[in-house]
Image (cartoon, rainbow, N blue to C red):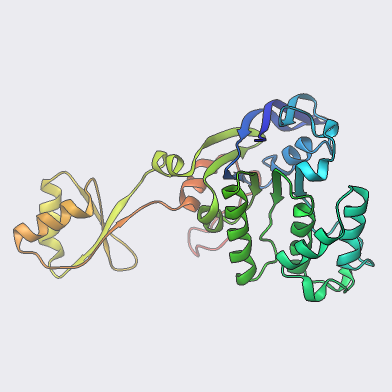
Length: 311
């Protein structure tokens, strides 16, 4: 099996350090979500792994070797970094045929990946007529052309419609299930939470998190219990006596911290207090990510205290 290994990777552009002594590994058999604010160094790191930029220091290897030294690289690594890179005057089929021919891949594989990407009926159209979502599909088809062990995708859901987003989600799970190494950069937190098993999070070029998704969410745990009752004062008093804190939300529901839904349910039942709603609320990936990266965001909007709008 092939892994991506980054060790003390550093990249400077003049006086700007885009990647700062990064060390992490992307293992086979799971989807690794690659997250971070704009300017965090995600795309630069992926370019360094693929040998498209030269590192200032450190190393990035695939299966223990630099990308540039791999034989038949398209069979080893499939990557989508820029869906706009394909020549617009070519047809999608000819674009893939050129890649296949130059890499010793059978032409029949072109039809397979076109079909897998949902582009079979439009493979003869020029790429310049494609929508952004169709170009994304073509880029993914190109990444899969060599049936690679390692797949690296930068914002693969960009421009995709809902059906396309479901398709890419299922595709990534399938690839990981086959034992491949899958690294996916994305800004869509809810979408990432639906497919990623592991997270690598960057901030200002530095590594912030390298852990399984579940562990990350648990580490940022600020869970609460949402409840509604016809007797809020009585239940609040009972919860206060148990050391819980309560707060009325903008949605008209109460939230309690310091207790589980099960504990509150038992407490309400013993006191004869009717409950209309009782739900354990767990932090979302988006909430946990924003909490983690609040100080690492290079470009952040501020909110007007009076209007609540960006200024």
